[in-house]
Length: 328
Ligand code: ADP
Ligand code: DP6
Ligand code: CO
Image (cartoon, rainbow, N blue to C red; front, top):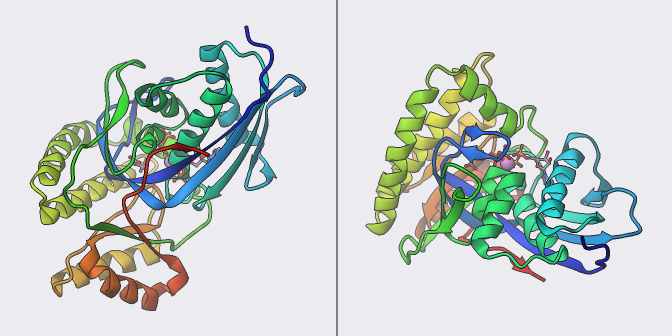
């Protein structure tokens, strides 16, 4: 058992936007999903986290954006640190200082960048030297989507069946490299139903859940083929369809719920209007009201002008493919 380590390790991880969504756990304890998923890591949104294990601490001390974290969010980090303690054999409490360069819990995947950065910083501070695959497996235990933020660019999470074989891998490609995600930060506040609660309710109560599982496997194969064929139209079409299929699982849950607000619908209609006028773009939406417009570099200006006029320029962020996890 290790009893001393004062080394502070800092890691940065970027968020990712799922094009084929993860929405349901077959094993909630280990976070093994019912389906595979596929995402793009984004350069504009990230989390930076520092971890120090210290013999002088009588409990884990966690801050996000300078504020002490307690309640459910604190427990989640504490549970994750306990996994790191168990796997590394270190027996110390930790100080965790995290800064989100992304709105927290608003459907912009703060849990993905947060737990990818925490996995990297905590495992290294505890003296572990994990491969990227093992880092992805560890990040998955904090938040499923975090396993994909270990890598940059397009990333596939292979669902696997247990802790050893459920992890993300980078999609090796030079295709679709002019892809851009225009993120519309319509609402920065915390959503009322977390991704974790929302997907659990969908799994247990939506009569369409078994169909979702079948459909996602096909969507995943089709989007990978679209990437390999450098086929943006097919890529965008599948992404938009898959996102709507996921949200149909919230509408069909009992009790039903919905992550969209009025501005979400306005933005969805605007994307369709632009598309029909010859500006090729598609939308995807995670568990929150914010929209990500999927487009190519050539149309970025028209799309940002359109949405800046609608919602104001401060709500519009243009993201490119971003990098994998890094140590500072
Ligand atoms: P999101 O769409 O932002 O990923 P989730 O409901 O999936 O929303 O996750 C949000 C939760 O992730 C927060 O309530 C908090 O528990 C956790 N989280 C977000 N950022 C951090 C951070 N920097 N460090 C630790 N936990 C975080
Ligand atoms: C809609 O990874 O946030 O963004 O594993 O419970 O932490 P937990 O959930 P989380 O769920 C992400 C849901 C999604 C789709 C996706 O990112 O694939
Ligand atoms: Co999340």
